[in-house]
Length: 254
Image (cartoon, rainbow, N blue to C red; front, side):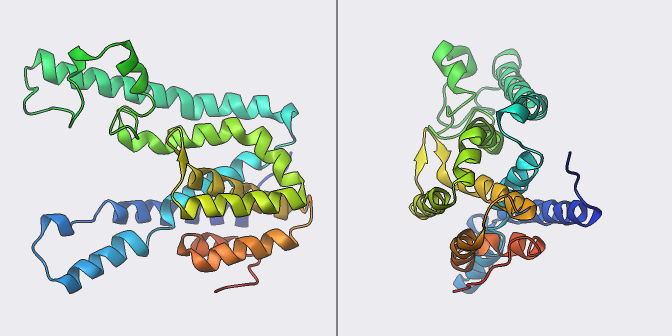
């Protein structure tokens, strides 16, 4: 079993910490609640929408990097799935279920439905079976689960389910180049399928690319060029590739 070196472990921890602060900045966009000048609004936009755009992509890439570490195909997929069921699926079900229960308790038992509604959704006591099922996928605004902040876990679980296919794609050099380019195009277009953003899969794949470059499983020359182009266009990846520059060394910045 391949273990992370001390340097790699520190790099991943540092990346996660920086990304956590990035997520805080993203959710600190306060211009809508303040009366400020256009210049100040632009400054807020830069801090909360431009400078920290690497945060969520960074988490997906960390997840992809760690998932494909020691991944050897279907033989190791079972253990990976067991680990993700404990670390992703069960917590996902628990927190959404708890959120639904707490919301119902406040709305019905405490009689505070008028103060504690759920946006444009029905009250919990009006939910039918289909609504409860959608609560775990895209009930909120047709996009997010009931506990909307857990969309990241939902997308990540889909990436994990797709991992065997992504693994085979990454092993085929010419095919993987094309697939990465397609996902980059779909990400630029903001495309999603069944509420799963293509960007989530793209960043997860990039974590896998980093692993395979590290292990030198196959030639990375073309992928370095493809990802470096995307890196230069999209600031999201700059931080992460700086941290992992020892494995994938970007050669083109635009």
